[in-house]
Length: 557
Ligand code: F6P
Image (tube, rainbow, N blue to C red):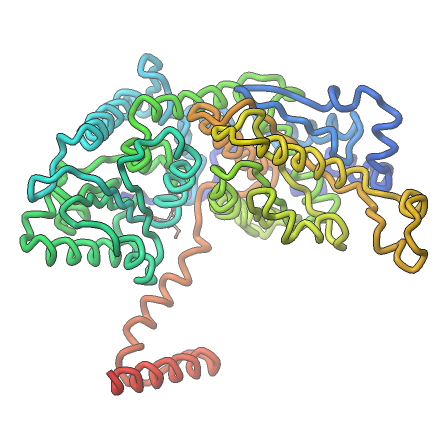
């Protein structure tokens, strides 16, 4: 339950952005370095590639293709220090209520603590609670996987459908896709999130209800879309199996809200809990990952958690010049607040990471897409960027044109692996050749002289010039494993955290999603009846048109 909130952040107040000494210093510095070209920077420093690199938890970060000099990094780290990032991080790890607008601690890092590592908050050892749920998840996952969890008619479960949205969908869905190679291929996993019934219809059209298990995943268990889909799932199942009793063997819930789970009709014995100190978008390593645990098995799920924990430790203890989340955070701030970049691209060169940028959109944009600062005032500086992306090389044949020759500066993270999980033919070398080529092309481009030297006609020459100087980070790892994925996700969690602290926003609430929900509730009641409409003229006209077309269609039916 939500407690009465304390009105202000427990963290020490921050000086407004324009008055921060490091910001001023960075502004001066920016004027000095803004026109430097990566071509020149690499020529001047043959060690640059190694100098601007760091490695942790199996991830090698090359950030040398950024528009920085050593002094830039020093100043950016000073900005983070001035924004009291270490104090904020320790407050988070300790369980202080840094999500002060909701009166909550922020303890997703407790979800991956090893069993023997106690974390006592408010007199309670949270590690015990966490592992109790993990043990139940493991037991349940084993039962489904070994066929001992039977459906209502005595058949073994072959299909698992996760019903949830936002953090109750994106995390497990992304991770299931990422770790498909480790999954039990005799199980079919589906994810239903949209309140568009097409999502449910297409996800279930080829499934046998007697072999299908629904995991209804919702932190609050009040989310309109999820409850509508859960009700649809229940009637789909009950009408096929002919008994309400079937719900017991075919529905489990993941939630913090036992009362609502029971009200929906799911036995709370079939509920896997978590806690209000886990934000939805930070919850894939809680019971929200149940579908994933079933798919890949409890051991691999444990590996994933270990990977998260590895990165937590790294973030907490590594010196900042080697600290991956801190470096990536401050580089993002550099482009966002000094170069005026509006977006940031996530470009994984691995098909298994096809949903990674969608996942990061919620993680980053729901966390830092805020114009009100922790002091309740509008912040004077830019906050979170637009996050977007697609797996390579598909993006190369779609939007990379703009990355290379567009008028916008778009920093990008390239993520790749030295070993493929599907080593077929020479595909992996082809993929990775593109991976390396793209960051090279973005950084160094092609000059007019080079173009002319190729004999390109003068009229065409300018069109073939690549000005370069487009910044990228490269993350290279050996192989995509559950552990590596955990570290990768935690890297971005902490990156987002550091940026939120620097921008002085509360990264853990999401009030910006509320207004639309309230209005939708009101409009839902207006669509089927001919009541008077009291919206603006645009919304009124649209609803009238919808009503008319709906009525005409039902007349035809
Ligand atoms: O509407 C946004 C949001 O609250 C997200 O923060 C959350 O992940 C999602 O909805 C789903 O919420 P729940 O898990 O409570 O259904």
